[in-house]
Amino acid sequence: MTLLRIDGLSLAIHDYPILHDVSLTVAPGQIVGVIGESGSGKSMTSLAVMQLLPEGARATGRVLLDGQDVLHLSEPELCRMRGRVMGMVFQEPMTALNPIQTIGDQVAETILVHEKVSKAEARERARQALARVELPEDRFPLTRYPHELSGGQRQRVVIAMAIALRPKLLIADEPTTALDVTTQAQILILLKRLVQEDGMGLLMISHDLAVVADMADHLVIMRHGRVVETGRSPEIFHQLQHPYSRALLAASTHQPDRAAQPQDTPLLQVQGVIRDYATARKGLWGKPGSFRAVDDVSFQIRRGESLGLVGESGCGKSTLTRAILGLEEVQGGTILLDGQPVFAGHTPNRAVRRRMQVVFQDPYGSFNPRHRVDRLVSEPFHLLDTPPQGTARDHAIAAALESVGLTAEDRHKYIHEFSGGQRQRIAIARALIIKPDLIILDEAVSALDVSIRAQILDLLADLGDRLGLTYLFISHDLSVVKQVTDRVLVMQSGKIVEQGETAAVFANPQHPYTRQLLAATPRLPESSNT
Image (tube, rainbow, N blue to C red; front, side, top):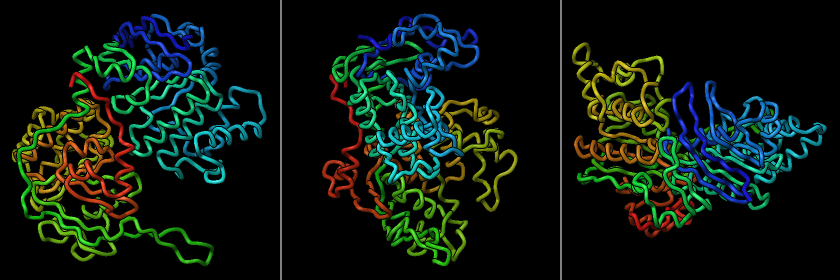
């Protein structure tokens, strides 16, 4: 029996072709993974099933869901199907949720829209749906707002909304991309359990082969709007035929070549650092409490070294990073760069601060879209006592862009004119322009496709060799950390619980938390093509 059958689906937007003769099937209780990079058409395929296409879209072919061709249904008929027959989980839960509505009201709204029930009954069913996704009311009251939940908890609310009416088909579009490894593993287990309990079909959209390899029954690999390969998982990995499929698999396990060796001289020294935050008062006359985000952390980074810092959301990685950059004062301990303190009293040491730069996770969100690239790349000049002007400034911008594989002419463009990988190259150029000693990479490749990620990692390795750079690589993706770092620190609840040579820690983890992180990391099956 087939629940969803897509036959010869082609799609154009304002006569620009997007999808070409796409065909796939999903049976009840089956998980089908659709894999591809940005622009492959995987998300547009899922939107065609939901009929949530942009204005100007025209689709041909057949999309049969539960016996009905959704391409020929009216909008009222589609509205009756959405939620009841098909549900969708989007990539970013914070944008999928209403920030001014409680989680209980948002799940109940799904029920009230489709069924003539009382608010009390809808609320009770919302309570049951949230409990099914492991958000029981005794720990997560229905009166909570999205901002009071973690990223993984918010994604569970989105899943509860999608399955509240027990649809026959669930579409999950990159549901774990922004989550750390243990939370990602929990969400994947949850989705698999819901499929088994309800017998629904699951169409799992992802750019990461490893995420769906162990979960999906069947894989569909897409490129440029076409299905290039399909087969049962994990057997497909043993007989990949299409060059793109093999390239995608190779990029997932890509190991950059790094020629330079770290020196013995320490560049960054962190000793006994403590960072506390005040918490809410307990009662009207009570004193504020205290939360220790960083607890007696000590480590050092040698010149030319690439050091990995891993841990789940909330472990203290970002707080520690802000302290190293001189953006947050610490209550205890010292932070030295090349022997000089990051803080001069209570003020960040400007001479030290200019020798460190950071590359953030979201290259689009870290830029002002109203400014041209030349202004964006030259932002760190404000840290210099005498920033270059005129021709010298233009030469510095051009050199920074060319060092990351872009052209000098790109300085005249706006950030929206570039792809995600190009934007991250611009972010790296911005970090390089004042010739820092240390670059902090905060989840710098987690939002990129695997092939683009491999290119950026190669670029970072090449820059490190040519310019003698030192990297602090912060990531929740242990597979990336394994590929690019010399040593690794594992952080839990504000403490460094394990550290050592990367290969040794991954081969023989000593701390239970490290073993937990490694166990949760998705792994690709062995392939005869690699």
